[in-house]
Length: 77
Image (cartoon, rainbow, N blue to C red; front, top):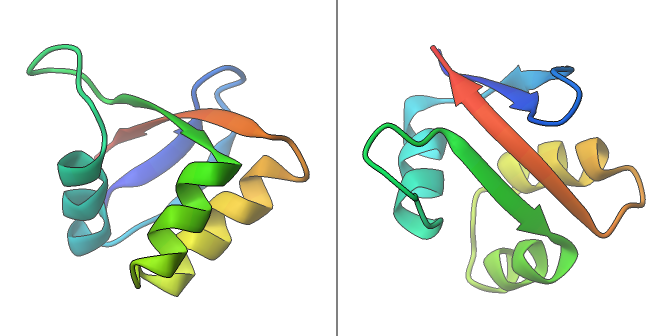
């Protein structure tokens, strides 16, 4: 399963499903084909929530942000 990390600190955030990873890759901009880092912010999460994104994935990001306005994440297998 794909594992998410805080890209700035390396702290593990949790595991996500392959379907959740596919959603992230489809929604977020990649700078190159091997890119596995993404930038999230509170407005983006709210937009995804309004669009019906996976609540468990959004909750994971909300907890990881811990009141901050933004978060850089990366994933690996």
